[in-house]
Image 1 (cartoon, rainbow, N blue to C red):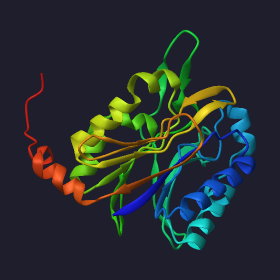
Image 2 (image 1 turned 45 degrees about the vertical axis):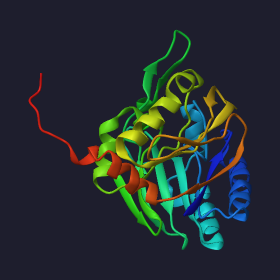
Image 3 (image 1 turned 90 degrees about the vertical axis):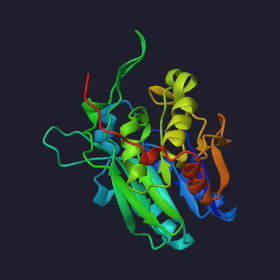
Image 4 (image 1 turned 30 degrees about the vertical axis):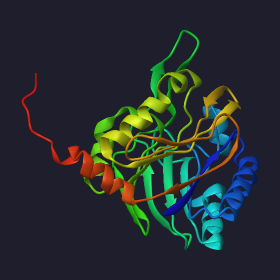
Length: 272
């Protein structure tokens, strides 16, 4: 059994102001016994302004949030998923990285994952997103080995691409993380359904810490969730910031996959 904590945040567009709030919730989660603590997408800065991001973001090597949270993980002796950080890169076009980090109890970076799928959508006449204009997509799926299980890392819009999740599960993932900053429109329509579908298809625990509320220039849906390998909702954080605790029985992964071993039933087929 492993106790995990999902942090639900309302991050603003100033990383220096967001950091102590995140640290306080990590301390609270640790005080409640959490061994694996997860933060949402863009923990350090939620902003729709590229100019603002250029002013306040840093490279991975100089990012104050990453440095501080690595120190916290080592001090507390916890596994920490920094859901993602918005980071400067050396790309010629100046686009940022949307990068997730798994931090070990020694404070080391166990693995990194850059969000592969960019949220380029037109939800309505008044609401559109073009993530690829500000962020460059990642190229590689990532799997990490921990004492409590193998963790596959994804971010937000990735949830709509089931082949990524199947690939992670067939590579050995038992837990898949989905840190997010979901739109209220798509959140109300699809969030729970997509999370449960990915858990059912893979026989994995799906852990999805989320941003909530009004940010500079946009809103997010909240409802951080933990889903069992059988597709049951183990926790729903609702619409308040805070800490949600869940106990995971890792034997449930093997039990679900034994009942329906679909990960071993792939067949080749000819295309239409």
